[in-house]
Image 1 (tube, rainbow, N blue to C red):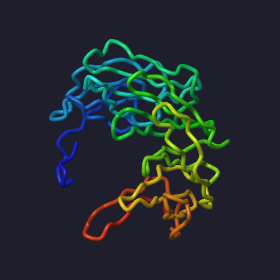
Image 2 (tube, rainbow, N blue to C red):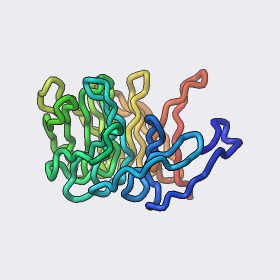
Image 3 (cartoon, helix red, strand yellow):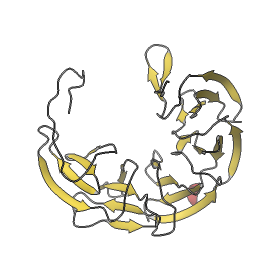
Length: 256
């Protein structure tokens, strides 16, 4: 744990249950996935409050917070095992995980997207299928076979879903609101594999990065490529938009 200026290390803790490979979540403490165990730490001291449970299945993507109708906050973990499924933990009742969509979705290796109104989740799996979930009922509303290749983490853009695939194509999908089916709006050849989450700019355009070092800006309306910049290294990190006067896009690349 570091100070925000990164000049001081406040604490460091060894967690015996395994490596930490996903992003911690802050909710009445710091929730950390170590190996297959969920551990709650004191954010001020790093002291372990409680080892909650061992996940019933492996998880390689970072968990997210989801809000129920009664404002209760839950932790959602996507299974990367072959059975698939979403594992839900209520931090106020940490006796067990509830598993939803057991064997109904494929393994999930990327993050989950949530609508701004916290009503729906969008989940992409390694079989190239995009799933839409109703959070109020935890029902699978619809699924769409987007690609024959694994998908990136989806992102929301102008009310629709934008997701990349390992075959280098970017797809814009109608979001399936009000229980409707998802439908294809457009797709674009982005030259090489897309592993990272596309970025929806405040202007409405989309930035997507590829493993060949391509950085592309596209129209969210048509998928037309507006500009293209080539970096020397593979891009494995998701781009972010930074407002520093003129808006800039920051990303990391594995330069040779």
